[in-house]
Length: 114
Image (tube, rainbow, N blue to C red; front, top):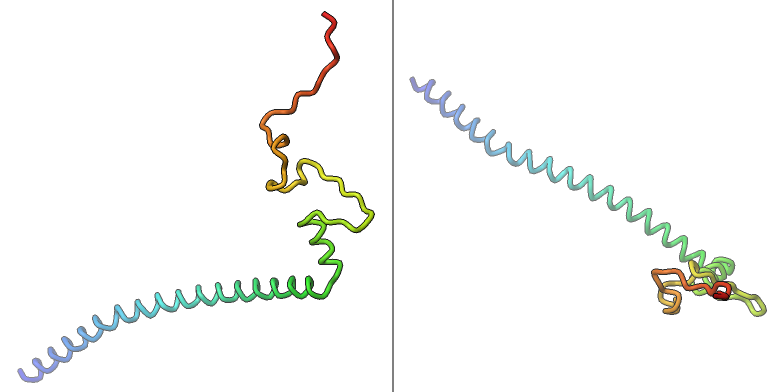
């Protein structure tokens, strides 16, 4: 009888140990997945940072990049150059109000002889 009691006690202790460990094992799996996701995000951000650093270096060291950006972003030109701007090329903040219309401007037609 004492052996049976000892065996029963051992089984109960084993079951309690297992029941205590299961949530810990699940939590560890959740944390591992979160860690992998964060590692992927970190790698993405490192690649993005590297790309931005390359762009900064190009702006600092390559005059043709600076010239291209000045032309594209600010509409600048060299002395003596003529810049033609079309409606689709104007930034929204610089579009005159007479060009911001939902309808086409009236075009005068031939004079009527009625």
